[in-house]
Image (cartoon, rainbow, N blue to C red; front, side, top):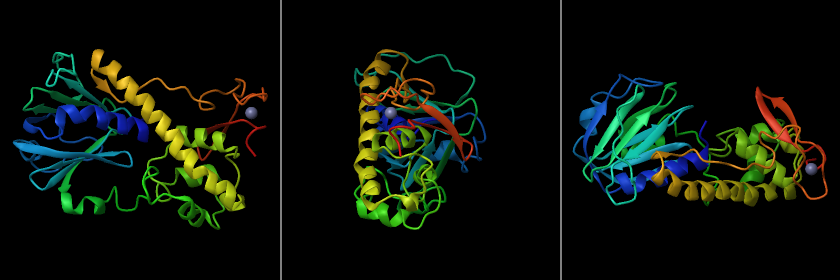
Length: 283
Ligand SMILES: [Zn+2]
């Protein structure tokens, strides 16, 4: 499932194909994904220019010169593929249509952007740009972890009195936007915090330490995605999924990477999701 860095990589990859470019035609091949598409979606996405491509949490927001914003969520298995060679960056010829190509954007610069989603947990909606932040999917989301309103004093206040494990607190989208299982595990490892610790039991200093660490973990992943974009341009044109190297995530039974530790990474299940951690380094 794509997390914030993957979505940010998709956004970066779409910019040369879509930002500032008119959508000459949109093919909408089914009535909806997770939810029905908005009325007349194909018409409303035809002959309009994409002015800005933004991201909020795990949502891509394409502002249009019609005064509307297209919201895109990749869900569990959604993929965006760019084909055509508008700027000499995408070396791909248009592929044959595939079974799960649900929405296809034909851009004025010759690019084609295809949204393919076999499991159909993805979503698209159109909303007035001025009210985008009030959309039901966005309204209650907390601050962006890479933005200015996510800072030490904020996190200390947000976790005050919380009896839930720190792992669950950081996964709570109302506390911080866009963090998923993988990057929470990685951040807690770098911070030396055991995922089962109750949020309220952590000292102010340890909570504060999480802020730069979360930014660093996400920043490293976005940088890795950026370098993978170059490969995607040469390879399939598919955006957003790249090779990661994680310290703890997915490494159950393998040795901890902290110097001189050597303990084995452990996996436990919290709220139905796997937590990976080092029992010696994370307290
Ligand atoms: Zn360790």
